Length: 137
Image (cartoon, rainbow, N blue to C red; front, side, top):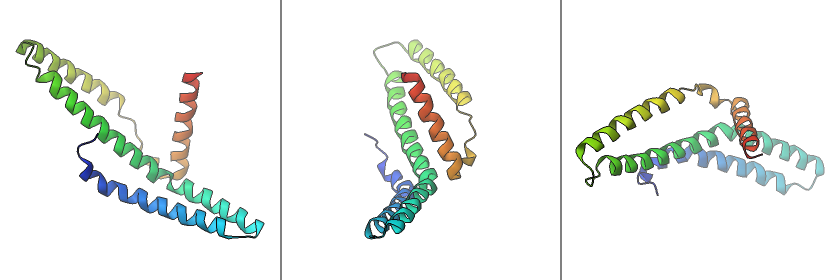
């Protein structure tokens, strides 16, 4: 369980707004009896979902990153403050963790600045899903 849930409240607000907007659009789609109006409402709902995709992905990313940071912090504290081993071992562990951190930073230097556009976010999501399917198969 994440400890810093108080800090997540503000990042959760945009996704709540987007979810409400999509819900309202979907509600308008079910209120109509005319088949043509239902098709148009369904198209607006899909468009609304696509427009909201960057916000959803950013929020999921933020929550995941916070969870990983929290877990990593606890693991590092346990590994580096382990009094059952000599200080020399803890020092070597610290050096190894630094090296590992540098490796992760180097790999993580991917430019996702254009993820705010719905088309680009959709493309990244599709590529990730296709990659996951290929790895399983």
